[in-house]
Length: 203
Length: 203
DNA sequence: GTCGAACTTGACACTTGGTGACATGCGGGG
DNA sequence: CCCCGCATGTCACCAAGTGTCAAGTTCGAC
Image 1: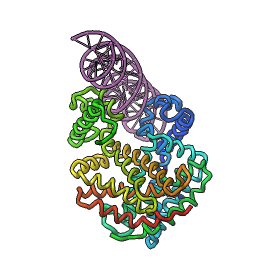
Image 2: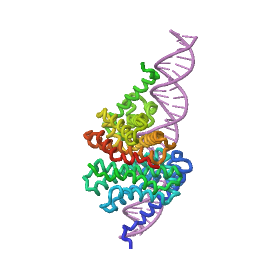
Image 3: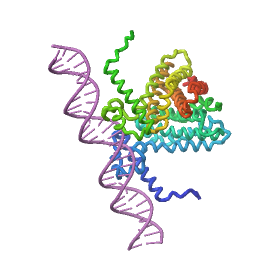
Image 4: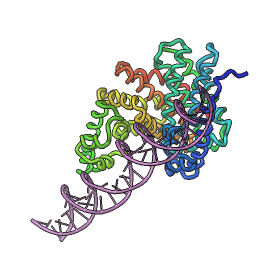
């Protein structure tokens, strides 16, 4: 039996509405462009008031970006789960891989979302903002795993940044090639290249 | 005699007003925080109407971010100016160095601006957006210098991204340490670490 | 010097994202 | 049956931008 915290009815209901809303919004966005759709329209299309929309998402951009937000948490979790004796480069590679795979998994949907984000300045900005958070998280996790003092110093921050750069670059090529390029292969190639930098645990 | 296009009076006037406005805004921001200052207040403080403000800057954030925007152009120019036979890692290192130096030059002002940007989500987001553009530019320049076909493929984009990650990480530590850390030294260290990745001109 | 063209500014109205306050409806538990 | 908590809708409101038009202002041509 899964002894997990019992997703109280209210919780599930909320999640349901949220997903429905996301779906509706996504369709509108890919149809008319992000900027051409107002919050009122989205809300109306989902059968609710503007005010209610903002009770589910903090901003218009969030509807799209939230969709990728869990990836960040996933990456950190994956990193934390890697065996401590593993080299930083390997651990980070697996962390990024897990997110890349999560994307490449449901190709259809993910591809649409990624293209939308990368092609809309406002969305891209928010996405990068999230990434900056992931970066702090990864850096902290990495510092912890290396027994370095917190807050993270130069090396962990740099390593986290490099890894996320790989992540974004892979997404870029994947979406630019309409899913033709194999994200996993790209990730592997990139990490092979930067591994020396990641494993240089100097000061 | 500088035979440059003669900065027509109007042009100089415009630049003057723009700088005055930037100065005023910056003072207000560091004083009360970015979000607590409205555009109307800034405009009033500079003795003009809100409408006129938006004729000088496309957005509230631009007043601050524009201040660092030339760095991007500078970086690309520097990269383009490096001798073609130079290795990518060396050329990129110099490009980033030039921007870092430009920052570290007028320490007082730059430090305030950087701290403001990194500490304000809205500003950070816009800053990252700009960086994304620089990245495209750098990647294109790099592809050109390597004789690769345009648009830039995986390697140039990755290399550009890695270089900018170094740039941002250096800024982070520099501002976090209140200017104590030497940006040039940090840059050198980071580039030593990632040089192998940058010079791996594989497919 | 004066007239007119081009440019700059201010004033005003309007759209849109986002928030706070309050009322209402709907559920389940006493 | 009534009360309590929760989700939602309504309304008012603020701040960021933008379009429009009516003034100045500059500057060169006549």
